[in-house]
Length: 177
Image (cartoon, rainbow, N blue to C red):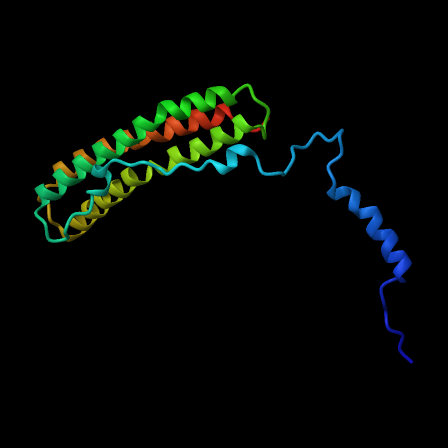
């Protein structure tokens, strides 16, 4: 005869449940922040980008100089959008740098920093397009415009590195303590 394993009787179940429930309630002496929705969480702002950042799409058959001009203009627009958002993020990070982890200021600074990081996307896409074209032409043995492509690629690398450094510098100021 086999004996079936079963969970303890209802009284034991109730006692076990009663012991576990206090872990779900917030005690007055807790060092952990509340998981309740904060007022700042209801305020979501859309990421604003300049129209030039969206103009980076260039037809595949376009002449090289047209592509370089469009990518150059779009990269300037993308960096302007990033630079325009930077002062607000710096202010939020400054307000949060002395605030405890999990506070409203700390949370708002992290949201602003995430929006700033999103603004790096258009420049990264342009840089990737330039890199892909440069590699494709190099593999195909087509030296036309290699110097101009390399110069734009280098310029984009410098701009991207500056944006990454800005994001990392700000993130370090609000890292959890």
